[in-house]
Amino acid sequence: MDYENILNQASLHLKNFNIKNPRLDSELLLSKALNISREDLLLNLKKKISFNKHKKFNILLKKRERRMPVAYILGYKDFWKSKFVINNSVLIPRPDTELIVEESLKCLPKKKSKIILDIGTGSGCIIISILKERPKLTAVGLDISKNAIKIAKINAKLQHLDNRIEFINSDVDKHRGRKYDLIISNPPYIKKIKISRLEEDVRNFEPKLALDGGFSGYLSVEKVIKKSVDLLKKNGKLVLEIGHGQTYYISHLLTKYGFYINKISKDLSKKERCIISTKY
Image (tube, rainbow, N blue to C red; front, side, top):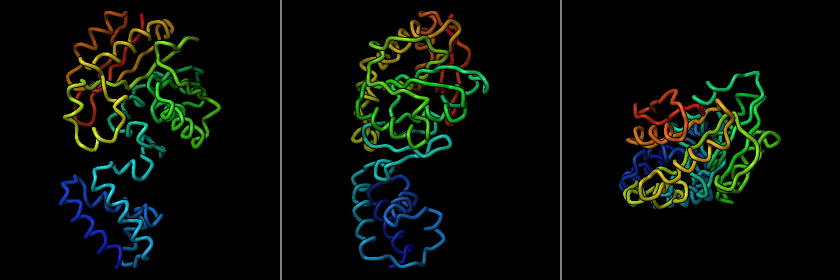
């Protein structure tokens, strides 16, 4: 059977399981099974597949059929300008989160040495993306998950940045030390009651620790803001990702703890997604 026929059958199969992008997912999974790029796959659709590769593809397809996210099956996700190793110990990097990178870079002059802190670093994709753009920066990444820290360290090594970033397995409450020029965070901000209503791909596979913002959705956000008061230098910046409909209350929290709000940025869906503020 050639690649094209396999893709047609697989797409139809995934469509029957209500998978959103059955053709794209099939192409990515077949590329993985063949160990070639998606571009090479599409240029060789008439090529025949071997029995072993077909068998491997069917195993991957079964995982997707059970709603395992493609990124976890592949073991990587593209974010900003790089490819990041991931597994189900970390959230899958999303395009909307690139807004943190974009806004942080605006706060960081290219030729100045600064130190930044990433609270809840996960795969390390945000902090690593920033460091790649600013060669004079150094950074610390915190996460309460040991397994997330392992993944972040792998990514830093793969991007040749392990000498400029330190990853620490710790809750932000217990973090002591230097003062930072910039703090970034994509904290858990989903209300506990809403976790069960998330898409099956998310609620059954992505780490609850990185999603659950407690009863109100603001538990981790307030902790990050409160701790940033101690960890930031005067006039230091805090760049936060927020959930839909959370702008008003988080703005109130920032003001309460002594921050001036510089800007509120919208994501690709035109929803307010990122707040940039300065410590008085």
